[in-house]
Amino acid sequence: MPGPVLSRSAPPPRSRGGTSICSVPPSAVLPPPPGRRLACWVARGAACEVPRVRASLRRTLRGWGVAFPCVEMLLLVGTELLSNAVRHAGAEGGRPRVTVVLAGGRLRLDVADGDPRLPHFARGAVPGAGLGVDADAEGGRGLAIVSFLVEEAGGELAAFRAATGKVVRVHVPIA
Image (cartoon, rainbow, N blue to C red; front, side):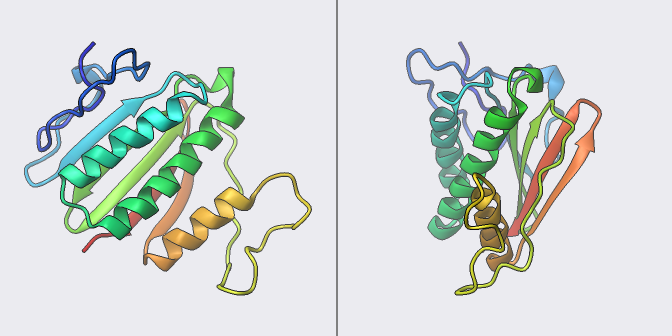
């Protein structure tokens, strides 16, 4: 099976034995314009896919020369968003897709799934004042942390409906 990353700017990460990350057919992703880097993974909608995508994302970001603090923040954010896509979209959500694009000093991370329900982000979380979520709630802390980390990095977090579900998008500047 070919490596899971499509990119003209970075070599594909090595595949680890029986990895179940599916590669995206070349016709499904347009090549990036000159000066841009693009990588995309499609997971099989199972929790065991999250560590594999995370490892591939780490190798790709490091290969692109993204600074360590930004890589670590993006790994945490990407892991949370992909975990949510697997957990909440479930079988009807299809195969979650993670796409990362580096261009013009900014990095965009998209996590897409087939579920049209948009997530609820906690806004206004400030250091020392909690995350803006109910302390007794079963969930919501992960997205609150994502929102806080992205805001602290000077980035933006958004979610929107797509033709086949939704996309949660993170834009962050990189140094």
